[in-house]
Length: 325
Image (cartoon, rainbow, N blue to C red; front, side):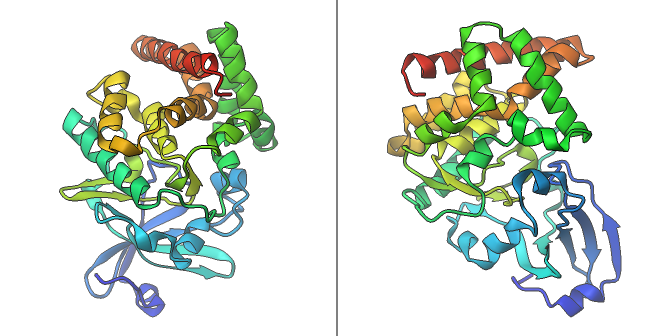
């Protein structure tokens, strides 16, 4: 189907059905059967019910503005977006997308070493294509790094995700009681020094929410969905976010993952930016790791996350020892 959807065609759809959202974007998704016999996915943004939008101060659906402003027009051939058209209806964003079907990964899918390389290579292409970008998006790097900053999210207490995050940060002091843990927790409460250091690195266009459930794997590249958090910052931020959120799904170790990243990024790789981005991974999802260590029902998951957190704290220690923050 060519880009561009006549809204009348959408209004005259034959059938509609809700779609579950593994990415938990919060937006309402439905699979729509058009009169032409083609399926599309329609996403509707509504800040009154979308927690992520509220956390980000997004009042209408920033992904729509990103598309309309042409930011997604300059993606490299190996990285695609699924948007066919997008607009605002009475201030609420509407995005019509290709139905990618089973090519979109789930939380159950594991990635082989070859698939990890495929994904990281495509991300490297994205970041290289926009290296040096200075034009900002509506989502600031400060917000991306401090999305789960306790003082920022406490206003939304009562929502399941927020309550879990707040408990997780309380547990973090227990599971990481040493000097490094205390330094990480201090940054989680105030990301300003970390953001300042990241802003000194070479900027590029970031998806800012790279997770397996936001990726469709294709033979000649990838399609990235859910661009609502797109921001500008060092490329390594996307890499670290993928690792901290999905590393348990990869058939490579954390260190092997980073070795692949260094190889595919080549001369564009920045080890300082990587150390900072790994630290930012903890300010984003450190709460989730400590929550699993303390509260998860499965002993194997608790042990896995304990070992994982030890690795992440070792990376943080290196950043602190280098005086990067």
